[in-house]
Amino acid sequence: MRNDPHPIPGGESLLFLTDDQIRRGIEAMYFAYRAFTADPDLILEEIGYGRAHHRALHFITRDPGLTVTALLEVLGVTKQSLNRVLRTLIEDGLVDSRVGRRDRRERQLHLTEKGVALERRLSEAQRARVRAAYRAAGPQAVAGFRQVLEAMMDGEMLAQFRALREAPDQRLAPRRAGSAG
Image 1 (cartoon, one colour):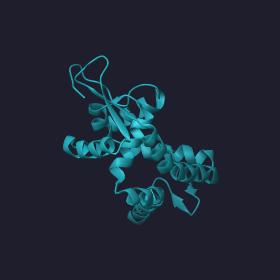
Image 2: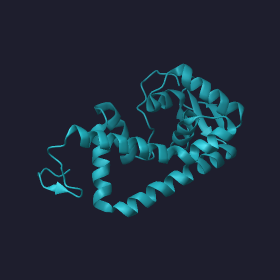
Image 3: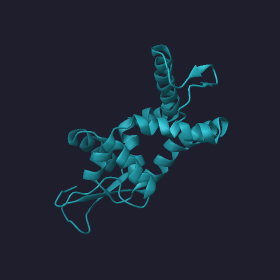
Image 4: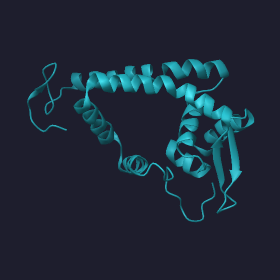
């Protein structure tokens, strides 16, 4: 992030943001999030699912074999809430829950072919939207955007995000010895 008081495009200074400028930034995030979720929401609505189903599919795709415990930590939801989502995804043949290979108490999650196809359909429009926005904004803006997003995360979330980014083949959330998934 720049540390100089020179104006950025639009005449706004980075060091002395007014409440109105902050509010506009928050509103921009709300509208961007609406746009980002609009296409998947239409698909989810067709099949009676919500965003929690999409998030679960996303992270299971990202890390096949992810345990229920790790998914709970990544999503930051209650066990009851996640169980409802997973039960639906398993019953509908989108997710396969297998006994852990190292710890039989763990449940490892994998997408079925049907689950892979749905996740791909849900995320295609989002990837295209993000790709187009990144290209339009340019590399410096993308780097700045990532810095802003990371600066908004608390320490634990940031560590989780960085671990995911830096070791994409590693599990999403740290495993605690003796924890069942």
